[in-house]
Length: 458
Ligand code: FAD
Ligand code: NAP
Image (cartoon, rainbow, N blue to C red; front, side):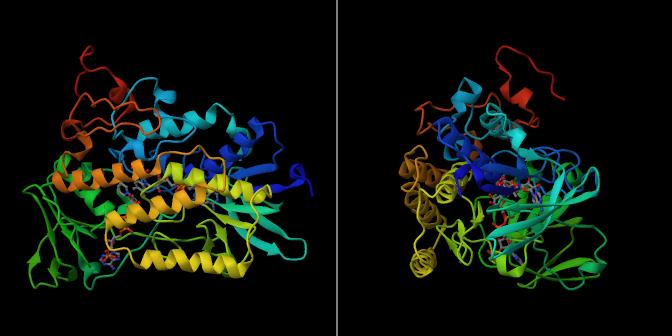
């Protein structure tokens, strides 16, 4: 079969799915043939998590809308660590911006790279993948979709299927005895849409990872009265402001009062479960479904990308993420070259050994600094197979470590730090307003030159 005759299906038009499209367009720009590509996205726009609107939660057509983003979300890592190898922040904004932009600015950057290529032509929006099966005789995937606007079901056939549906959308919601009688708000971080409802409230966050940290700090910034964070395994151990604290695990509720395993009890207005997410693929049968928790190297994925039981099935972005946009790119470029036959996959036995090697390395991880080293090594391994622009990955790894140290030093002010791009060498410009004082996260305000333009605080 010639390359032009191959049919590639991509489910999801978030950063991972967009990386896959971009990888093929880069090949086309070199004058080489590319397969037929069709992307299906259940939302009305591209961008995945970054496409946050007031509809986030439930879509116009009754479909659950995916994102776990929220108002006032600012990047939690330096933008220099996620910069695309083929489209820099300077390419997009034409001037240096700060290292920790708000959501809308990062969304604009994502769109900027792909809209120059008119990628929307490849994407069918408002269309949800409902079911997939694989015909081993024809070596084709049959995918059933729902056109949400016209309420029509249709079927497509593909030689390769790329699953790019993300894994931070389906809450892991633990049960604590007596919670059903708690009269305040109980929600998961997935449904947190901003700190406004918690102004003046005493809130309990269960969990000790990024969501607990960021939602806690945001609620502090926007005026919650107190924030208590309850850890299961380890506290974050940061130097919290006076109205924030970490306590051992919640054990149960009694008469609406929270009791903890260290024996103390407290009253709260709201409980937010920052207890992570489940990898869920309701459109895949169990034999094609990636089964994993949130970790650095999900089992059964060769090079973190190719489903080892069926090498025509590709998963992007399924790892826990330090690196994001540029890691999805490196994965997409690798997948592209497997599809184009430029990379010959070894036999399953060899692939098993490679996976086992990475799983063993993963077992040796002890802390976040090791996580960073692991993911840097993973990307450096993957990039040698494709022609994705080579970045200074070790330098990006060092930026991540500086970021980890900055958070330890001052969790409320680490976003005021600025870094130098390892691609362009351009140093980020401080944002015109300190992050803690900046209540307006719009792109208009962010890009405004505050020194020359007096803005009226809303
Ligand atoms: P997603 O962004 O989740 O996109 C998946 C897409 O698939 C969505 O558009 C969805 O609608 C679509 N889809 C799902 N199911 C179907 C279906 N059945 N049919 C059709 N379409 C479907 N990363 C950073 O780099 N910096 C940050 O500051 C940052 N903040 C984050 C904050 C939160 C609260 C969360 C949860 C994550 C954050 N991340 C951050 C990590 C985030 O995972 C990545 O930045 C990125 O969005 C992942 O891209 P993705 O394409 O893999 O998945
Ligand atoms: P996560 O990193 O998977 O962490 C899950 C947390 O929940 C862990 O602390 C875990 O504790 C805890 N937990 C799980 N089950 C529990 C239970 N039964 N009881 C008590 N605690 C339990 O998930 P996350 O924090 O939601 O982060 C997900 C992603 O979102 C990350 O990639 C992060 O970068 C992103 N994010 C970004 C921003 C931002 O950019 N501003 C904000 C929020 C989130 P153990 O340690 O005991 O397992």
